[in-house]
Figure 1 (cartoon, one colour):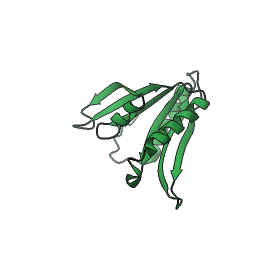
Figure 2 (cartoon, rainbow, N blue to C red):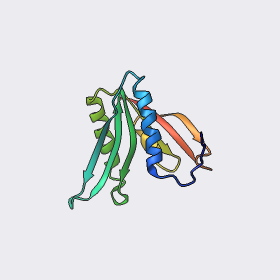
Figure 3 (spheres, one colour):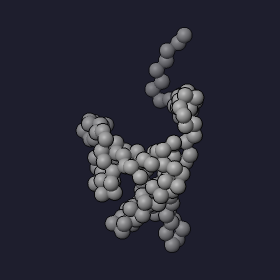
Length: 137
């Protein structure tokens, strides 16, 4: 047996471990499929100006990210994207949403939309905070 610390591992190493954990979990959970879901907003020129992506898993939407181009912020576009992905998740049978956001990101935005902080990770990654938030759809 050889234990090795790899200072700059290839992405394939992390992908391998993630796949193995997912295989283990899916063999034991009552839900065996995570389905990707996304919302994309394009401008008149066809360029992507906003969107969100995540996965639906059992009764949950796991919202990985929501983004609006800097020039399009303040126009309620983020709210439209959030409402659209929540509606699509409900259509898949989801009843809850889980997301995380950093202290300089969008906590007030999500709270305005009914999300509440369930857990705060302080000192993340050093002086900041990460908020784990949920909402019942």
